[in-house]
Image (tube, rainbow, N blue to C red; front, side, top):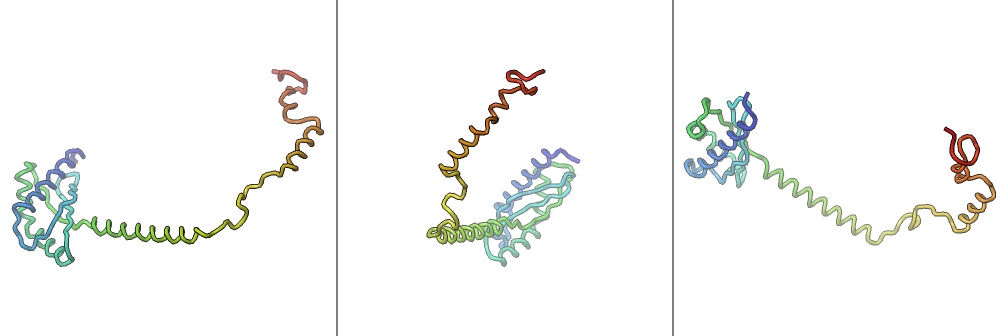
Length: 174
């Protein structure tokens, strides 16, 4: 096994080499507008997976996949020459569904905005189902009655706080 930092550096270097080769050296007419999005390499540095996106239709994506498969040997030899590792990793090209996922998320967000606007329109003329203030507040008459009851009872929480544990006034016994 290899250090994860070294594997990440090698994966980044492979991504740069592959992108440069696709831009400058590979002249296959089937190759469409390709962007290398990510590269991942196994911990033993034997297999590298290169993720890519293609701008275009499904037919252009299929042609680009075929062009990448046919150029895999040339790309692997160039990766081995430029990286200088003892064993050149085998390369696998995988279509990255990043663009489709982003489009799907945009569609979901648009649907959520439409639902929010619909709820806002429905709530515009609405009124609460119950009282405007759903919390019970004592009436001013009830509050005065409560104060009178406490004074008449003779013993309240303040008296208990002043009395000690033994019932005598003053400090509690220790």
